[in-house]
Image (cartoon, rainbow, N blue to C red; front, side, top):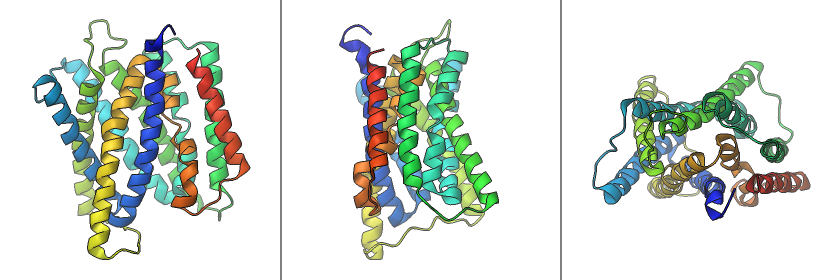
Length: 315
């Protein structure tokens, strides 16, 4: 990497992790008040409005003019990474809990690396591989420490949850790969698509993909139960909406935008790794969110993840 421009991609990846950490905090608070299904729907549609407004302000147009093959790639990547991935992950949370689910999700950068090499023809140097391994080891160490000692899960639920979380991990990586290709990378006759415009397209398709899922869930009579809080019903819904709106700005709007900047300017395996540090960055907030103590093992894992990130910066 030469000059500051070479660091924009990695910096965008780190910014994505920070934004996703804030998103997790906001959506956890919102979900406990109004339910995860409402949060999931609201976040996507708010992001579409924000991204559409930003695109109109920047270009004066209502929707990007993109070649059909690239529009298809961006649309499918949105449904994979923003609809199916999140739906599978939320279901895995119910089956095996968020801790085990997040552990499985740390494999996403490995799938992204494989997709980048296999489908985009990206070359990854040996130091970058070392950085990815060190970073992933730190993240997995932290998440394993967060799992702690829990009652054994029912085998059926465990297999179902692990399968869903693994699917979410693959879908996230595949969505990242397709979004990068949809922006023009690895295409002989492709045009370069601005990351903000690409984010707008992905989010639009992701929101559209959520509509049949939400209708099907409503038809089946499944309702997401909001956790009780100390607030009254009206105040709980209002504050839940507020947290959801905040999370929609920092996550689906700014977070996804920054992730595409990272995918656009850095090798996808490196970018996906730097975008996957939220399980580490959220540790300082754990005592306030769940009242849990962060042990030495978590600190060591965080140090390892930071060390791996430093390696990636100087590749």
